[in-house]
Length: 223
Image (cartoon, rainbow, N blue to C red; front, side):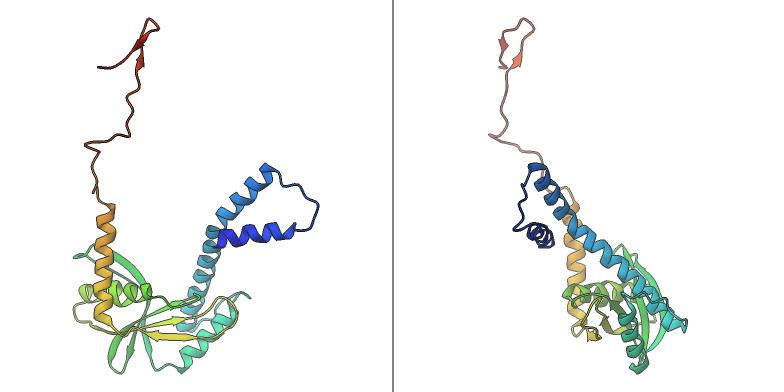
């Protein structure tokens, strides 16, 4: 979609003009369109990294570096942090599971009403089901394995948009068990699809036996 929209913008920019569309120009525009999704992805990743660093600074009580692009998101995070009854007990927590052989890092470990939970903030357009698998699934499994005395009893995903309309959205994961089951299923499926599942063809009519040329110039068909 992003590639098509980008190509459309370039075409509309010359609409109505007496411009001859050369093959080279068309090839260049299509190539630029193909690159567009990666450009957007890289820009979003960079903004997300900057925002996360700013959020971490706020929690530590340090003045964050606020670029114009993320200043509204930082202000929303500051407001949420001041109003929540959650205590942040650890940030940028790295965990791993020796049993399931995966690892990762989540944004914060929190305590609320005597219960320990995971907080993850996303600078995204929406909150997606995959976020639940990542947080209440993988991260929770790894925390409990790595720290046997801790039980993850809740997960909150806080979303802060990268563009207007500015605001804050906090969604809890409401089915922790399903999230864990889904994460392990996705992990197993990913590993299965990376394995060698299909062998070479034992029968195929696609292979054409082309006669090899003989040394004397005559055809030398194989038997």
